Length: 113
Length: 109
Image (cartoon, rainbow over all chains, first blue to last red; front, side):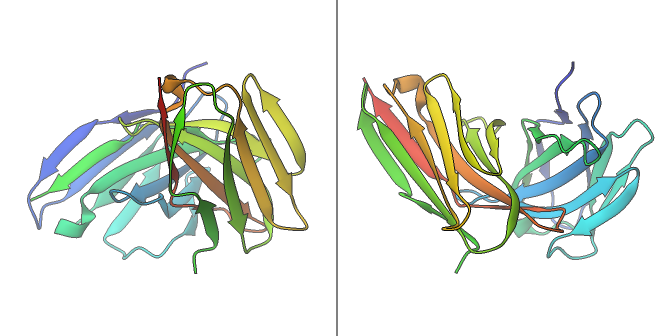
């Protein structure tokens, strides 16, 4: 049983650029949730994907978008990067159908300069 | 006021001490999670609770649904327990999790 893998682990981008972060879900899980964690704070919910459709969204602007693929892996895209987007981005997979707990990835640390 | 409040924010203990971290929440929940985050950033799920008590090794988690309160206990603490412990709740009918700000635990040898 594989866990959740996120890539890349670290990334530096310039303000105004676009970024794509990737997450593979754990085997048997069909739901992926994305979170943003600023330094010293708890994670904040960005959105969740269930069976390839967005299934809930937190208080993030439309320049944060996502995608889930048939194998349940997922991407988080952020356009027009701002300095405040610098954070640790975490994804977690779960199975809504089976009521399982969450498995988290190790995160992608994004720095916007 | 945050929907999930943890206390204390920071905790320093000597090896072997019994540790308690508290979590209070203000929303109806379907489940509460205790998570451990090490300096590298990765999060490990320790417990998922909807009622009662769970134990795993030296870790014990309890929840009181009526009082909207949960505690994480660590018995015989060890320096390798040093990490940030985060309480997170999943609301009823919601698909997202709300997180506390975390408790930074340092266990000294």
